Length: 484
Ligand SMILES: Nc1nc2c(ncn2[C@@H]2O[C@H](COP(=O)(O)OP(=O)(O)OP(=O)(O)O)[C@@H](O)[C@H]2O)c(=O)[nH]1
Ligand SMILES: [Mg+2]
Image (cartoon, rainbow, N blue to C red):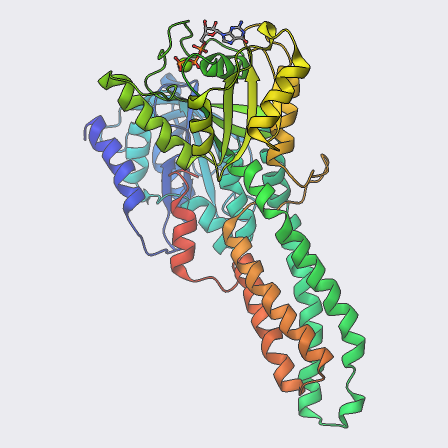
């Protein structure tokens, strides 16, 4: 097998939908492909220790010792020997983690070898020819879920941790991994279960309707309703912290868009010259604005141009405005806005945006400039900066934060809904909870109240993964890389 075969397996597997079985043993490279300090090959399943016994020998090359077993959670020094050829592959450290005290809650063996494509590939091959099969994407985490070590929200948070781009997005994901959301959902489920039991009992033992405690449950369900609604209200902002915002920097040529990108990135990323039409292609970089990953896109200055290359860049700029979640509209504050500025501003009509009045170092009368800009651009927030002199950039960062996080979230707030799957399910749950509320107020038959309660319970079970279809599980775990 060549290296490219090896890569092809990795890539091919991501597209491969596998039936999940828990009775076999899986193996994969758990560190990124390529050169590194170390690489880790992870093996999980009932035969993990047997597989390790076939490959791993303790001691130095001169005194290799076959192992009979390994104590759990201890690091062993030794070598991997290819089972077919008896050739020593690499010097390694091996750890055996006996079920259930492992990532997957199964028997796990992790082999740390010297980083590098060949060593890790050969060790993985040796594991595969000794009884393991190559893991599917996310299969280790999926096993942790199927074995009941974590619930679905926790499994989902693993991918958010891997992808987190700022400390805040990492914090939200960690809170979810620690079970915050699961606990909240379980509490709500318990309340609904108690209600369901009560109303079911009222069906089985019909009494006078006046004996049924509708009124007692109204405050209970109101509380549930506000909890679910509160969670839902955090989604828009939670999503911003998690996924970031694609932010187009737009304006006419030479106003300082690339300078703005550079000053926010604190590096000379884009070429800046005094020649209008410098930027042709778009440039994308992520910058952390008070915990929000802002994906900045520097675009070509928009104007009528005869140049084929520049025109292609300008077309791209227009597309980027359409696709962006947020726009930084840059203008040169040292000159009055012209028709070109106004035309470009129109393109940003339906976008959340901030006007960046750049080159303020050249402005003599700030009050007059502010008034002039207000008269042209109305109520849109304006921030005055000098990208060249690095002036007022901190205020720009604050204004960006305030413009995108409209509700002024408490800085310390840690509970955010960050996952669209959870949002969809909780939206459904809220509708059921409202039906329960109406049912209680309208004192409808107990059997009718039981319907939305059961629906709400089923929905909440989906969040935790208790009642989630295989297709959805597959979709969630296929987002993971192989080896996680
Ligand atoms: N005085 C002053 N000059 C600035 C400022 N910001 C940018 N410039 C200058 O304006 C010129 C154009 O800057 P760029 O950042 O290349 O402008 P751009 O909007 O990216 O231009 P295009 O890519 O051509 O659309 C350069 O000479 C910069 O040094 C500023 O705040 N003050
Ligand atoms: Mg530019």
